[in-house]
Image (cartoon, rainbow, N blue to C red; front, side):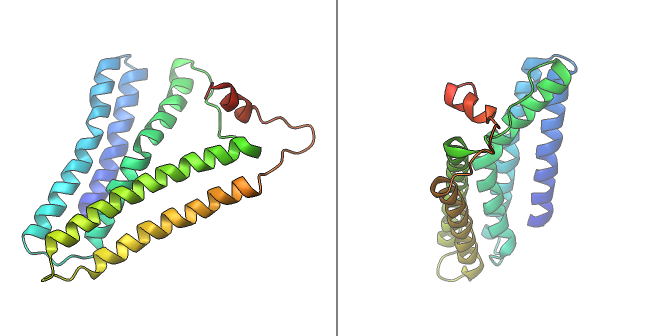
Length: 193
């Protein structure tokens, strides 16, 4: 049941996002689109409540509960970033807005970009860890919390691996080929991003 709800939340996330962007750029109803976008966190709240109720009703903690915590953490860490990214592309395609700049490709600008993404991963992992720890305490010593603990390690590994990738971009920055300018990096330095 939890897996089906996670899938429903993911489908609902993208459906609400597509509807909000269509309302904003095709119908030009900006306030309505804001209301639709504000409904996005409700999906995660529903998933959280249903997961807690499932555990309260005596369900054995399993990978489904761990996956729900990781999903909620990812949405908290990356949700706004993804919505903003997609909004920029929709504004370009449907409202004549400027083409969104891609991420910087070279040098310190790319390292800063990777560092910022890593911080989002740390936030996502932190939220997942907190939810999983709350579930472990909720289940108590009587229940089998091994699967919840294994998902805590999964969240830590994801943040650690992403941190190593970001660190690699800092230690060994990719250099632009001769004669190529990184305009995304220049815009970032100028504060236009």
